[in-house]
Image 1 (cartoon, rainbow, N blue to C red):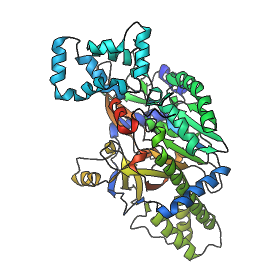
Image 2: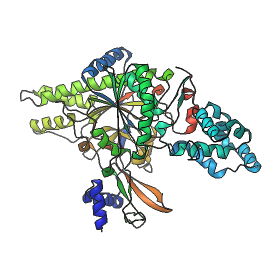
Image 3: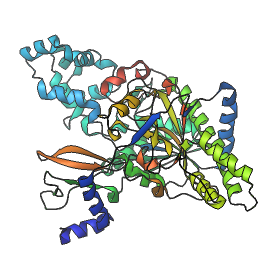
Image 4: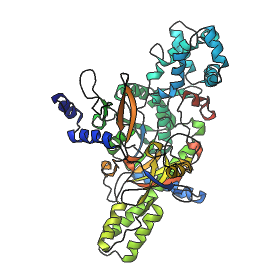
Length: 519
């Protein structure tokens, strides 16, 4: 089935043939749906932090971080193409003539685009676009007066001008200050200084596309010294790219591997789940994870900084309790009462419910079982009230062994044609904003192999198009879904003020992102 050329490609990517066999088999068998038991709620699965504990948890993090390495990891490989989807559609459908303009101003579905052009001067990239047009002998104000909307967008989105349509979202202008326009990369650097600084050093790690790596490094070089001086910090910033060994194959309508024009098997990025390999390479005690587009200007960062420290304090508190019990479990002198207390602790504090029919006839087997449940990476996940944002949510999930675990689940993982599953999904009260603090070392301070805790059954198969033909593609279990399914998971409610992503260009006109003109 595979040619010599295929085998050579596998070897070059570091992929074993058996892995490709497994991927192709997945297209035949499909991935099983996750089985929801009930949504995680404030009454059952999501913790709240009482005001009287805030000072303690913040202090726990600030004291604990002095003897720990803290890293903030930001998945930043995505391009801004989706962010500008409405603008690309406008370019394809609008003609710079009177008839097209009259239709444009009368069509209710064009409200967003009409507002876009009316408010263009308030978008953070306005001056950047204006300068680019001036360099090419054009005046933006005149073009707006003449309603040359299509050409304006071409200068914004294509190689004709700023080329934002092919720019990573992390390098798009987001927030205007009095003397500076910041990108998401900039805002994450600032956040790193505000809650990730240890002994005046802040460590950040960005996962980026290889083609965009030079641009990220160039931006970092431009702004790094500015923020180091402003926030009295020394940055240690690293980058990584998604590993070729995590790419996946696609199949055509006949179920055969899709090949490119040169006869090579077509590989595609395996989705954000591939980043578990990048996370596994980070040698730190405390790892914050936050999406590239979920940033706020300085005037609104207060709650973000506060709750990042609270989540990290919660992580350290829970790790201390877990490690204490692991130390007990390896001692021969452990008592029956201590074993029972540990079992109760797991079920009441760590998002796990054992199978109803599980009975231990041997105390040693019970101890081994409890040890395995506790000896895992830990993640504390911030959860916000569900306001209709797309994405995953917190649920109790029934696993293959009959136990129930807290997991973050995407809608694509659920059989929404099953009325009961749909009912459970619709009752979800909270949403996952990708706000995680991770502990990836065990009770002996050695790093876990994070690849050992992936649930490989939680992948995705979706439909795409390649050269005009329909193909099926496969994504790996998501980074905060299946890739972390077997971690110890703790959900903590955080305020909606910590979550303000920019998914479309119009989100930049939300109050929290508007021009702030602050130094």
